[in-house]
Amino acid sequence: METLKNHPKDELLAAYAAGSLPLSQALCISVHLEHCTECTQNLHQLHQLGSELMLSLQPAKPSPKLKDKLFDQIDQILINAATTEKVTLPTNEANHSLPRCLHQFIKTGYEDISWKRLSSDIYSYELCRDQNNAKVELLRIKPGGTSGTHTHMGDEYTVILEGSFSDESGFYQQGDFLVKNSLDKHTPVATIDKDCICLAVTEAPIQLTGFFGRMLNPLIRRSYA
Ligand SMILES: [Zn+2]
Image 1 (cartoon, rainbow, N blue to C red):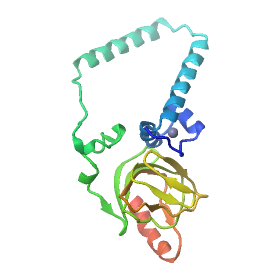
Image 2: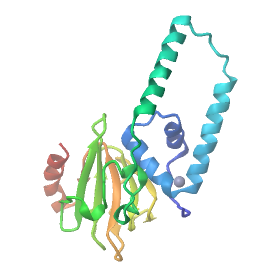
Image 3: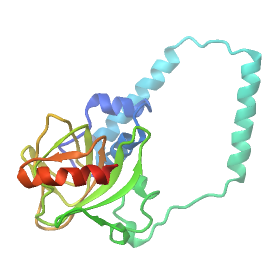
Image 4: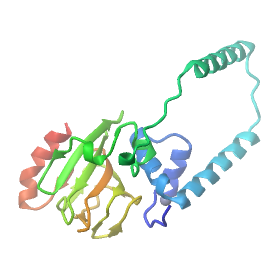
């Protein structure tokens, strides 16, 4: 693991620890955790704190009916676990650099994905939609390419999977975690050595700025629907 400069805020990590985040945001944090020792340690401390809080609570006495129901459910879980075949994740060379939590979406590697061309510099691949309709996708920017100056109509969560990029606020490398909102206007530019691949969660389409950007915005909104 490397030392990173861009982490989820404490309240976001606490919500992750409590299991209260939408799945799309939790996925971004899971990817970040695979690269970040600091947040992994903080998460461990939050779990410990949560356990201590639970232990300090006065236990309520369950009704006999509820107790029977719980034991029945536990029995069922144990029976299912005994009969479920173990699934092993693919471990071939191609997906070596894929975060473990993305294996359910990408079976082999980034090269085998049917990327959709958005511009001469940008390709995308939609992984899924969250319950709140947030779009979960991979974005691939060519070396030295840019997504153009844009603002956001909702929150945008990004984790760098491969390569790196910079914008007006700094330089971001593999594992870095960013949140941009409607007040942020930025121009990401990938570094020239390799493609930059990111996991992005957007709650609404981005808004390109400038004359040509404004002409493209209806197309972007259509691709989001
Ligand atoms: Zn971190």
